[in-house]
Every structure is written in structure tokens, then in C-alpha cells.
Length: 198
Image (cartoon, rainbow, N blue to C red):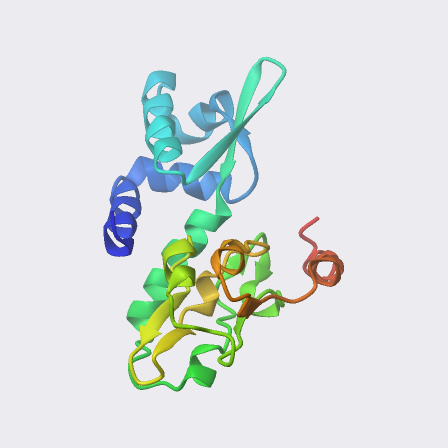
């Protein structure tokens, strides 16, 4: 399944008003089925069916707490959808690589504008051999092939999943680097305080 097919499946999951309502409720914090039933006014089997669909699509995750199972949003999947929408509304065909690296502050990552989270890949063109391992390994579809440069470029920074390093691990030439994770963790903690998200 290619990137567009995966995105299409995710968008199909959003094609029902009750599923959208569930996601909206979960955007305010995790909830159990009983809470979702009360807030939607729908019957429990009906809500459970939609939750199962959302879970299968990877849009929500679960965590058992005692007798209850709590559902929460899977922000990495939602970030992928936000990036797809951003790509449609801001086509990058005529933008330079530096312009494509400009973070989009309307993408939210755990309550923080994604543009303020300093987690982004960097490709060393002297080390890159053009193998495209990063393109294949990246779950967020961050890279695309630049025929003029003869190598991949970072094309969709906003869809880079924070703390994911799959592309760097897949690169046989160690051409992809990320900022120091411990330093970024500290910066994210400060951003959570700034935005009151934790």
C-alpha cells in the first residue's frame, strides 16, 4: 500500500459524523466507552463499533485502567493527516528546499505547535548516496526524490513524527541526523509549561 492509499484509508475513517464526534471528544483527553456513550447519546454497542474502526485505522490507542479501557488519540496518525491536508492547501512544487523546511505552526503535536518542536531531520548531501532508504523507512512521508539533486530531500517537515528516527536508522551512509534527543525533551517540557498542556 503506497502513501496515498494509506492516507485515503485514514480519510475514509473520518467519513462518519459519529467517528468525528468521538475524535473531537478524545481531543480533550482520554475517555472510556461509558463516557463516550454519555457524551454522544448513542448506545454502547454502536460506540464500540466505531471505536473498533478507529482503533483498526490506528487513529486511537487504548490503555486498560482497572476494569475500564480508555481511548486516546494517536497523534502520529493525525499529524500524517494534517500534513496531507497542508500539502494540498500549500503545494510545494515551486518552493525551494529551504522554504519547504519552514515549519507549519498550524500543525499541533500534543498541544504544542509543531513548528516550535525542534525535531527535524537533516540530510548531509556529501554522505547521501541517493539510495532512498529514508523514503522507504519514513512512516510520515517526510522525504521525496529530487531528480535535479539526484537525492532525497526533506519535503514535508510538518509530518515528521517527533522522536522518530526510522529514516536515520535505515540510512546505510549515516547521512541523516537529528537534534540531540535529550535537549529536545527538555525543550518540549518547557513548551508544555508554556502552553499549559501538562
